[in-house]
Length: 337
Image 1 (cartoon, helix red, strand yellow):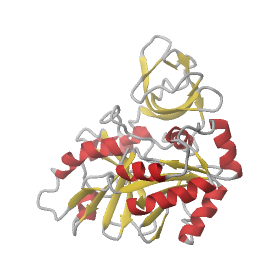
Image 2 (cartoon, rainbow, N blue to C red):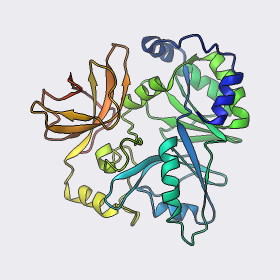
Image 3 (cartoon, rainbow, N blue to C red):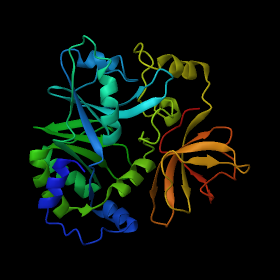
């Protein structure tokens, strides 16, 4: 856990001996009021300098030279074979661009990304030790955020700012969801205020909401495993095909223009505990049919998950993971063909 969250939770009035509400209670709280979740596993990398936007433009799957000040964008950084090293959310700030992603993966890729700077005027600075992120969902959470910042983003992936606070509207239906980035100096006060007014949830519940929104992630177990199109980054607007070259661009473009996508991400459930990212999905003959992207427990005693499956195997009725049968669920967007 990063230092800002250690401090915020230490000074909080929460009783750590008290168990958090169950998933069903959290779902009800989100419908009728709101939930708030500390997200210390997320990290932030600050990319600054005169060449910051151009540098990221030449590295990521996203156009970073034309991001408006009130929007955020998803993107991947890939290896030369087009496999995603990391998925990031790009957030504009007064002093450059911020990359939000899994903190462990972000720390692992920073030295590699640094190697590509060469003569560019770019500085990479990890903000994970000084910034904290929390998730908020539900009508009461939205009302509380409105009191804090005045007005919130209208569109999914939109950005609102109030001083050093960044508020991002996330995909999620039917209740609104937001990601709040705050400096460590403000985090404890904000957490005390919000956790007193809203129902506290844990990171596993937030991951369940991400899964229901069809949002993929790349973890240390799945780095350089998936091509971004396999992770549905096209319908999530995380791949820009008219921006020019970047690592892995030829592979990704070939899949797009020649229609060679043989695997894509699906949403599913199993009546078992959540499998770990990177675990294998098999068919009735024990042949590999896919790989787990993420998973989280649900209120029914089972799990919901995202998995990249072979398209020609996805409709098989005998798919399973850890001997638990896989049942496909709808994604909230139109997946790639």
